[in-house]
Length: 613
Image 1 (cartoon, one colour):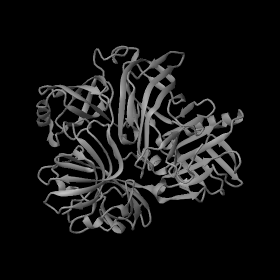
Image 2 (tube, rainbow, N blue to C red; image 1 turned 90 degrees about the vertical axis):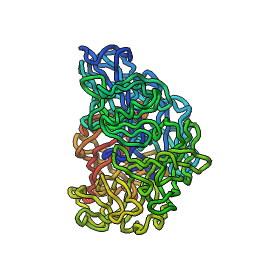
Image 3 (cartoon, rainbow, N blue to C red; image 1 turned 180 degrees about the vertical axis):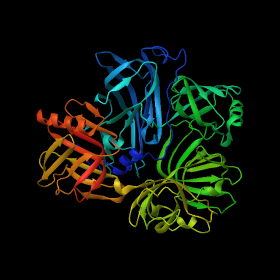
Image 4 (spheres, helix red, strand yellow; image 1 turned 120 degrees about the vertical axis):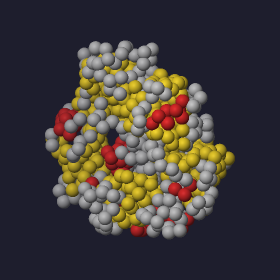
């Protein structure tokens, strides 16, 4: 098995999974209507309308990871297997940040489901590492090429699915990229061992997005019917969208609100591509839409796409501009891709529609400043995109760095480390308007976001928001989310034959790891703080995982059987590992994400995963 001890798992992405960060695009399910399929109405006694949602968070090492989900089967306590996926779904997991791609919605018999089985097809899978222009080789845990189907059995006994009759509920499946992939960046190879986090009817589900083609609009009822489709165009079902006075529309890059937006949508021809964002209505087969995109500036809106960060710019305030965008591209048919490439993007000050997601405000090319993450729609020839009559979406942008001190009022000064996955040295700061920012002292408008975070000199900080316009006189960046990263650490231990010896002790409230001897070539014992850096795991005091708050999920993988057990509490997980060890199995790997207390040698794990054999 190939491992990269320096970065085999990425703490930054694991913690991003806990706080949720920026997004791209996903797919929502069949919002069931009569004739959609399944076993009957979700309101009928004895059945539950179950929305199957697919999600993931950003990874610090993966630029793109595409795989096909072939099938999902649920096993009911007492017997009975239900298939809940009617069409295979291809998805780029890296794009599913903050959103859920609901791949289907079906009626299932009410009851308690204690197991699941997912099948993946890796024949056409593609993984591109950050900084690479060609896909990585995919390997299985034995180091052999991975190009077939992989079946992942899940035991849900520790966190069963309680499907109550007459309800609508969400089953959220999180493909944990960082726990599933081991990266050897030097060899451009990735070892794949699928790991799924299961959340049933989460109290705070991620936002749903329903892409598809427009069928009809009822301006009186403020509803629309769409054919929900996969991003590849495969039909899933027909869905009804419900709008209200607060629903925001962006159609061909033009923003409108409420009734004006419904009227603008009604003016679009049938077959127009639509992306509707919102929440599943628990009382009716509807999607309550808060935001909708249609036409140009959408996934299948007919344009070529360039996405990445603005690293250079020519053209001052009030004039047309040429942006240098470092990132990736795809043609309108999503058949030709370029990765880790520098593109030139031509934008017109008065002719390019510049928008932000779910934002009614008016923007123009002046708002596309150095550092900003953008998705540009237009006509691409080679590495030159003409977006002068197209749409540019300014995306929420992620900053990581260290505080230069406690916030002063609403302002936080940051020594910038990187923007997204790019080091701050990749950006031509001198091109950023008349008063270019200093990346060693970047001024962030954080409002009251920092008040509960105890940020001071040297605190590792993650911020999300937008860079100021080229002619702005105030702060360099306006944040809408802020995280103190000092409390987000990954503890990782990988034990193999012929190296150090790990003597574990698992109890209901602690998992202690006694490590002796010298590390072997395939072994890992480290603390990973993402962009802050790596350090060897101290052996004294004995490193110990304890329950974290708030807990998320705990996983136990049996390498021999391939089964992955999902636990909702630390005690259930830890006792499960202890039982496996008492039955003669060995601990191969253990990891946890949470706050590290160096003096006590403890990690308050909100998430943990153990592998035995």
